[in-house]
Length: 504
Ligand SMILES: Nc1ncnc2c1ncn2[C@@H]1O[C@H](COP(=O)(O)OP(=O)(O)O)[C@@H](O)[C@H]1O
Ligand SMILES: [Mg+2]
Image: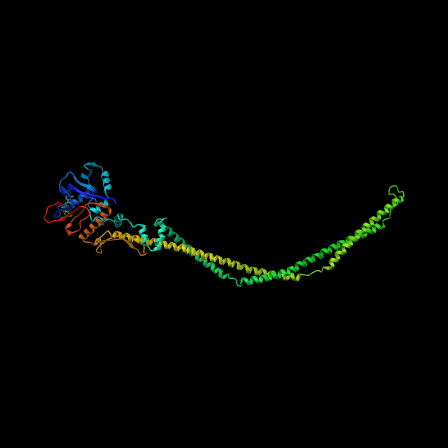
């Protein structure tokens, strides 16, 4: 907090309203007295006119005399700012304003800039004129008062919250501001509100499906029946399969036997033909009878042929006999009845498998229901978390406001200050009301109003660290008051008395 002390030393008026020439020397306590219309209020106005060109409430002021001839209006004020002298002057001549700082002519921007740097205009006027503060908009009043009161620290507020709320918010505040935390959880709440409704309806739909798809026959008995039918079918297939092998073998044997018979008949013919062909005993070329030796060779050759055919014939007959012997051991089996039974069994098996498959689908549906219920639970948890955080933020704000109000209230004696107002929905709304003895400022009498204004300007002076003179006009209306923070200038009406200024 910046400390600043402003002290008025000498004020000089020249052609300011009814004052032709007046010098006021200020003390720690300056009393201005005189009858009505002796120019007491004009002295205070001269100060704000010099500084800002306004009256003591900040409205534009034209102080040129209207009751006598004059050349120019001039006000100078010698003041001390933190012990350093400063002489300010404002002159108005034929509608033109001139400024001076320490007797050096200055531009309006220089003059105004210097003042701005010294002290805030609203702060000065609030301290100088105890009724000025109340003319400001309530939001400005509130801001001005709170500007100088340090807000309670987060830690301080968190410690006063219910434990779980304090813990949760404390962790969240490590990463985000309170505003951002609220934004994040408001948006999550909106999202999860919707998702929760959707999740609930999904669970409901799936549960209904589950009910309508509940299998009538238990899986164990379906499986048992299925196993039984499969076993029966497999037994039959064993028979039909082996019957198939025998029957096929019979067909093969019959075919082979037939082929061998054909072969045998062909060899028979060959044999007959060989037997009837005459033996050649003449040379086919020279037609001369062959020699005995040659004839013998031909005969031998013939015998050889005959023997070969005979051997073949015997072999084929033997082969056939072997096959016929095997065929004689085999019997054709008729399995058409069994095949029909197997088909029936297969139909039953297929139907059972459809039922078993329904159980599988039912189980999947059950899993989906469980998943949907788990999803629903997760969404609800997230939703509840956000609701909890939002409530915690609200509680934080309320507690912060309460602590701040306590802090502000602790600065005052007679006045009570209202900074917040609870709305219907429980949220807090900024407000600003000052009451004294249970009465709002606007209802106070003149003296009560002055008292309220003095207490308030002293708090602002202490909190801002700015000490400056206060002026109390028409102080005859108030019997006694505590010495304010800074120089005191008061005016009193004294009947039949000329204007008198006494510095004490
Ligand atoms: N521009 C002006 N020129 C001349 N006289 C003025 C001007 N404005 C106000 N006055 C008069 O100056 C006198 C002093 O006024 P004021 O300072 O309010 O007196 P007080 O506060 O002592 O009652 C009044 O008679 C008022 O009418
Ligand atoms: Mg007056």
